[in-house]
Amino acid sequence: MAHECTGCGGCGMTTGVASHFPVAEMVQYQDDTVVSRTISDSEAGSLTLFAFAEGQRLSTHSAPYEAIVQVIDGEAVITVGGTPYRVRTGDMIVMPADVPHAVDAVKRFKMILTMFTA
Image (cartoon, rainbow, N blue to C red; front, side, top):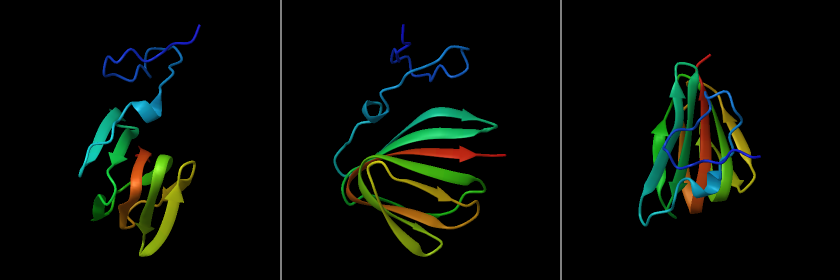
């Protein structure tokens, strides 16, 4: 029997059982804003879901960790080290640690952001 998310707010990843998540449904679009939901945050890294309304952005910033973006819906331009990359549903981009990057939603856009500290 599959284990399904019960909406408890936790990810269940440390319970010792497999977990199934309807990722695209776990964060909802809202007009004129960026919505985020942290699924896991520990010393080892973090996993965060984002939903961007069309035209919304995360301004240029950097992180001391490698960051992986997986696009689960929509379309955006992610600029890494000054180079823009157009990403769409199903795409993934890996951003090196300490390299400036920004996210611009071309259309409504959902992504999974995974960062590793090690």
